[in-house]
Image 1 (cartoon, one colour):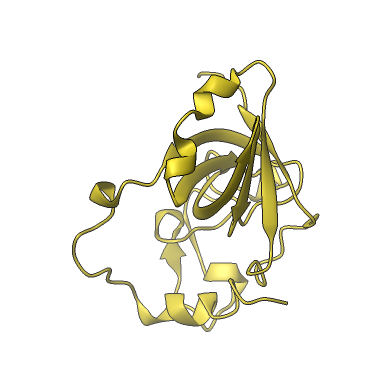
Image 2 (cartoon, rainbow, N blue to C red):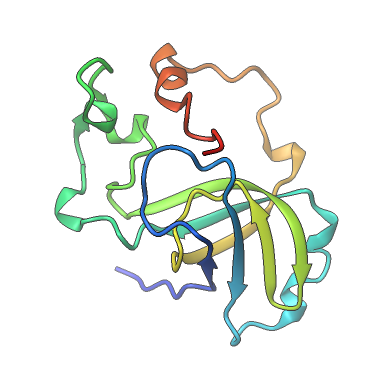
Length: 154
């Protein structure tokens, strides 16, 4: 067992963790006052950041350590929790690559963060091109169907 203290909190207009229409969400990531603003020196030189966050609204009784149909839809194949990006996962952690729009003191303004208001942020990492896959990404066809409205603007 170990303890992780959030380093920041998300501020945005989204109060529910609905599955779709995240495309027009702009969020502020407000860094904890205990953390020096110097921790952000140079971050404005990056176009994208990877945000690791805690699904604080997920019901722990729904945590999956097995398999299910994505979003509970029987028309998608049954897949293991580690073949999905579902909220109710063993450690309730999410990760998303976002576009960095602005840095102002202890606040990062980002686009494309699929986390609701007041979500605890566990870590922030700059996206290095060298850490992204150099080859084609391969995924099952059902993923594209599942995600077709995820980043759509409402």
